[in-house]
Image (tube, rainbow, N blue to C red; front, side, top):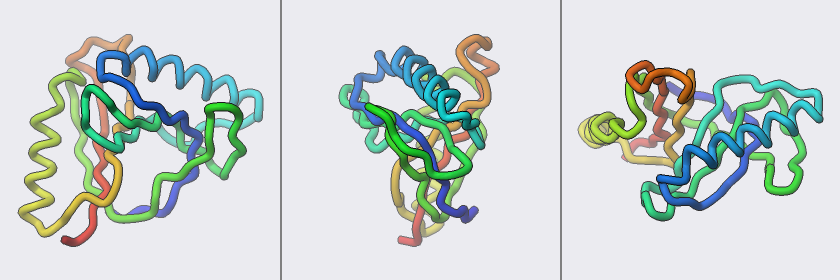
Length: 146
């Protein structure tokens, strides 16, 4: 699937995987408060963009897509989800059991002549107030022809 560039508001941090759930909740809270201050609303699902997969030193952007570019404030920065070709998978289940899905997607890329072209995005349809087996996440990988 090919998509156009999407403006975002994000908080970019480095963290260990075990700190991620609290950091995500805190960041979404800050972002929502700032967007309310601006009188803006989100235009799609919240996301975390993974710039690496080092579980002891993750480089992530936590954010929301927005309709138009917005100014940053403090650690909240304007950003974009880049234009380009993507593959995606809908995953239902516990976050900590996603690894086989990532492996399957990477295998599909390799077998079909694609390579990674940027961060991996996880879009969250519901949250940790749901039972783990009902969590619904869209995993999106930016790709290019190899």
